[in-house]
Length: 351
Image 1 (cartoon, helix red, strand yellow):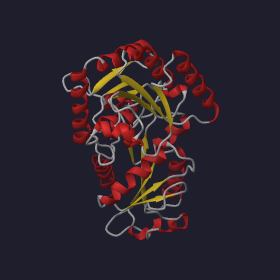
Image 2 (cartoon, rainbow, N blue to C red):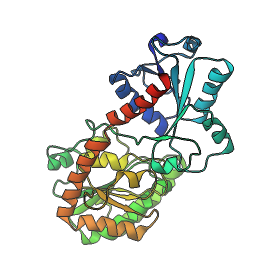
Image 3 (cartoon, rainbow, N blue to C red):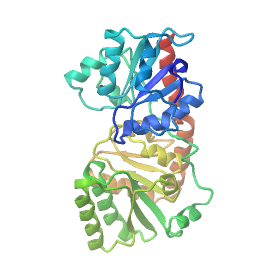
Image 4 (cartoon, rainbow, N blue to C red):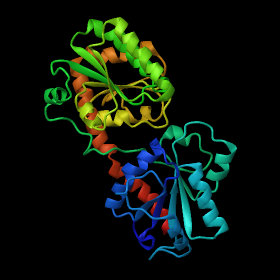
């Protein structure tokens, strides 16, 4: 716990279950704090290591922080915008409200009502901004480039995970479910691997609840193809950067995505990406002269097969795209840059 009198920014998390929003807070707040932003979290479901305040501390919001006219409340959900509006407008507490929108769909009337009452709005991508009807600042997510970085020895990185170091590896990471396009990846591999004996594939992620049947069907499909020893379902892992380091190519096959960090995580590890045109993927993956991968239409199996084959069959293109991806993430997508850009929004409201 920290003294709220020393806090200038409150980042609430009013959802107990882990979600993409919660993960963003967990990754971003330590970086913001390290950069000197006086930020604390509020709510359940967050690590105790994060600077935090209690609900009873909110009574202090009637007073200004030292040297500031107000504090900032950074909401990321409707349930976090509404109480902030009540604190500011009904109780006249000295706060201003920032909302980060990651949604790529038309907002409900209720969401529009809340968003119109924000003091500032951040969109996580250009596509997200297109759905907003208020002025906003686009700030793309960044990643921890210290956590995600290339291996010093690719063969050793594969060996540590029990993979054959002589094989090239293509991976698909994330929840195993139809929305994530895991079936498209598996079907692509069933088509591609028989003619490419030097490649194998890895699906890393967990199937939950009703999606377990979907995963079982995919495993059965793989078994019938005779590729069970080369299309591996390795489950969910906490050491996911190690799995990226073992890859030679990454495929992001989603049918829908809010933002999607996996292409950045792969690129930061020096791995080229084939990604569908959902979420922010088209804003992350560069095509053309400084190619880091290819962006294809969503739910298009033939396009996925063709794009993946283009890298599998061209080692020099594969290597060049990996090097370009590494440079692109280090130069433009470090999480510190995201934190500084958000900090500039805070500063504009606290002047």
